[in-house]
Image: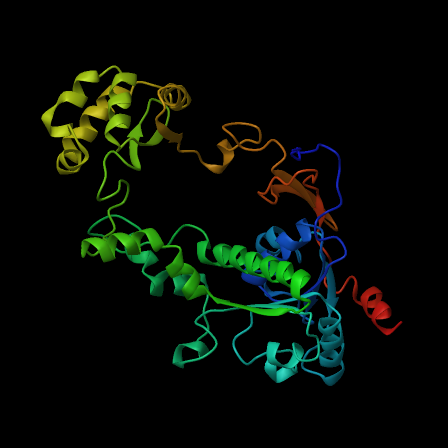
Length: 389
């Protein structure tokens, strides 16, 4: 029996030849479109005359603000006024000729323009239509406008984030939008695989609120099984110790986890305090949870004189999970496990290039590539000319 081996030979992008029409703004649909573009799809971004709102969110210098720069490289921009009949017809023709449509409008908005899933799928049975809403397509909540922060709040995510006794805190980036983009891309790819078998497309439908709640599955399992309401407590985990606990070092901070009994024994040995593993207060996980304050005091005393990187290296040799807490200026390609080619150059007309993370997937034979941001409507004539030919 022979087995296939990974090859270093260059291969065509897996989605080469696939056309995606993106009817989305901000993050969820555009970020999913970015993933498909990185995998080789031709992504046509339909923008209104004012452009995707993300072009100038928190930015006044040009049409390539940070949010737009993050999720739109390598796409083609077509500017259409969907308020008029001609723009609607052109968008409809583009959508019906695509393999995938991505959308993240409020329920009913695209239906008014003749661009809803129920209107397109009967005419294009091979089409995969992926859409994201805030609170679902039906029910009283579906009419609500919703950004990432609303889903963080309503899902329970914010209730878990922050220090005990203080106000809930949002996750420090648009976590739900990003998770929704990954979920949407996954659903679309699954639908494309099925289409390759059955010949039929599909509707891929998800909401920010469902994505946010699903991200808390482990916490839900703890809640259901223990009957105890999960509470925010800052660092550390309520049922295991030490776990996600922060140690101050000579030049920064390190977070570590060693809550399994055998891991805790290794931790104590590694830091030169083997007797702690024999202390009745720390002999097993329930005891360590009960005496977390004393435990953390002793661990910090034993480790605070190390530099962060040296401590992480030492703990790694002992088989202990840990990580230096870094700010973004300290994150470097090719260091601490970060892929050397993870960051890609992003170009835009009239602007110095920026270097930001690309697709996190390492796919055999495929290289991460730099990308260019499209000007608003830059490809309108090109795309529409091909549409008419």
